[in-house]
Amino acid sequence: MNKDRLEIAVRRLRPDEEEPDRLPLRWSTIARLLAFTSPHRLQRNALLGLCVFRAMALPGLAWLVGHIIRGPVAAGDGAAALRDLALFTACFLIADFALYWRIRLAHQIGENVLRDLRDRLMAHLLTQPLSFFHARRHGSLISRMISDIEAMRNGIQNNFFITFVSVGQMGCAAALMLLANPQLFLVLLAILPCLLLVHAFFRNKILHASRVQQETFSRVTSALAETVQGIRVTQGFAREDTNAGIFTRLVQSLANNVVKTASLTSLYLPLLELNAQGFMAALIGVGGWAALSGTGTGLGDLVTFFFLADLFFSPITIIGTQLSEATLAMAGAERYFRLLDTAPSWADRPTAVPCPPLKGEVEFRDVRFAYVAGRPVLHGISFVARPGQVIALVGHTGSGKSTLVGLLAKFHLPLTGQVLVDGHDLADLRQETLRRQMGFVFQQNFLFAGTIAENVKSARPEATDEEIRQTFRDLGCLDLIEDLPAGIHTPCSEKGRGLSMGQQQLVAFARALMADPRILVLDEATSAVDTLTEARLQVALARLMKGRTCFVVAHRLSTIRRADCVIVLADGRVVERGTHAELLALQGAYAGLHRDFLSATT
Ligand SMILES: Nc1ncnc2c1ncn2[C@@H]1O[C@H](COP(=O)(O)OP(=O)(O)OP(=O)(O)O)[C@@H](O)[C@H]1O
Ligand SMILES: [Mg+2]
Image (cartoon, rainbow, N blue to C red; front, side, top):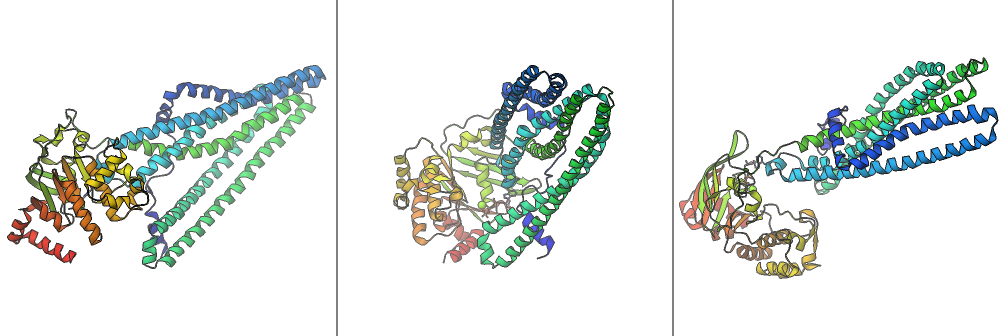
């Protein structure tokens, strides 16, 4: 496999590869993020106070050392020296105590903000119509919720406050140096540009290298995930060697990139140190000469200067690291806010009313619909279903069956035309109140991670275990569920893994029956189950449908035969309608489909 194909193969799984993972700092975004600290303003303001204190504390201590040397030590006053030592000890204990609270409060605020960010996003996602989720990869929504918000955590908890303290510390140190000895301060100013140059040069190179390294790393994880998730396909198509080859090359390139970053860092740090040592040498030279020649610079000044200079230089690397990490947080924040700002493409009208108790009549009046503008998938669909009738929808794949039932559930709005239940236009009804009177069994049974009972309960949270058993009994299949290791409390992982296809369908039926809906929408699963299970499912299905208006996207002949009306769809149009017998007699589209059904099931 050549390198390009290798990259394509691996990149497919990476979410948001088109999105930059770093962005320059933008004040409006920072301000918006900081606004999330407002509900915790007491803590935040205390924290800012602590930050200001921390910024002054260490330079202040350094200054105090100089003061002790210049004063009591130079004068040989032991008692005063001891007293000042006690003061010094008290000061650094207070400074350390402040550091403890600074870190602790930053973490508390960070966690609170994170929780609020996640709550906000979740609430926002839940207001979005189905089309929103169709238009996005689930992976990208998950990375907004997980990694982007994590990146923002670092931005709030560390980057912001540490930079704040570090810049403050540099400022205080500089001010005190200037105050203590303007002459020596000039030495500092002379050496500073060299330092900043080295810093800027290497920072960019290291940033770039570590970005490449991260990219390779995420490719390694994607490749791993792809191999594990697709292990059946890998083994089935005997692709083990190919996949192992891709992996080897990726791991090698990761190793190369790590070494590259490390070699840059290993050059950068000594150069920085060289600069700082150069500064110290210059300081000793200039300061020592000044002290010896008695120009007023004392030993105390020199010591103060050494300490202060260190407090001035050491934050430079810290600030650099924090700012570069902040660009990660910034990219995360921008993506997060963009998602949060995505208005729903449609919502219930403000005048929408709760759905009244339904009898179950459904009417489609000349309904047209398109997922993508200009590419209609349903054209002028009209029909009426009386309460209690079973309507079977048949048609080739892509003919619009699922779309039609999606419109009935108000998952989408018709482009033109109306969908009515008991004479009420769905456009005038509140979605959730409508769906409460509807039951769904989807084409892909989705079960939540939890037990069978918990899944059935999602239709009616207050249901008791006995009611759940009764539901399975009503479906005529309690024995099948009781045979499972823990009966109705058997766990199923998300998407129902751990249960067979037939068992998953039964749980989905029970969930729908538990809701006791007036209108039942059933997108029959096409998955094959053995004939015995199939017979049991048929019984369960018949019981589930009894006495309700049912829309069944049918793949089973038995379901179609039972229908009061079969609607045949082709390319988004109703081409035939009638009972199974009537349609067979027509010898048209349905007869053709029927032949396919028969040949598929024999
Ligand atoms: N989310 C979507 N975005 C864009 N087009 C879509 C979307 N979902 C379905 N379509 C298109 O709408 C048409 C009807 O799809 P639909 O899912 O309703 O078919 P179906 O009859 O249920 O097919 P199947 O029997 O395979 O389930 C198809 O051409 C399909 O490509
Ligand atoms: Mg479908």
